[in-house]
Image 1 (cartoon, rainbow, N blue to C red):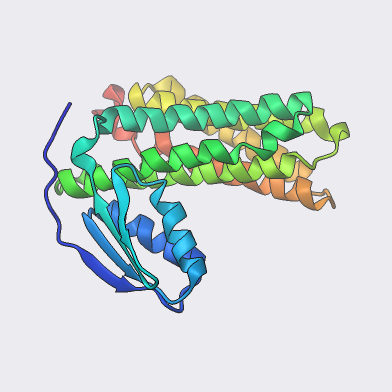
Image 2: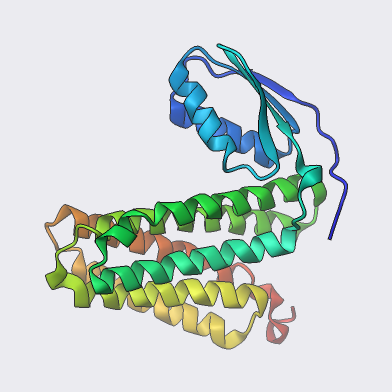
Length: 261
């Protein structure tokens, strides 16, 4: 599939005085909103580093020029041979891979793999950002578009939570492996159901999601009595993932034939 991007005028902004994290978010949002040229002025080398690192996550963007206080970023998207549909599916598959890696590595006590899971989140960001950019440049006005945008934003958040989960699991006592593996497996099933329902909405999947979601919440609440900071943080990430992916079936129930979709 190929297309011609609608050109959107450049944005010129001064990020001086912002934190590197805020500069990072500004670049990501400018990309997602569809700008083709981003001129960034800064007063701190740390801001420049944050901007350069973020550009690596933006498919079809390159730093074209840099001085001691300005970075110019341009779109070279016409050179890309990728499309929205394959990018979105790739985003789901990377998320599922992160979920499975978390469970398998934790079950085996593979601390190194858990500590390096963030590399997969880097790839997930690239495809999610690209999809959001495509929606803003190419999709127009339909109600379902806004829901789609929301779900993709949430998918990127799920990746962040799996990345955080892996970091915390790397420091969870192996004596807790059985109980944690159980709840991770259930949350992973919820994530898989979200993916499957998105592409093939079926009533059974929706019912299974709400049933499993309630089971997961009860199991996590029982485990939250822990005084271990890494266990508590891991449980919080699992709870966040469950809350997000549970919305995939519920927000698209109108697509079910039995409900008139």
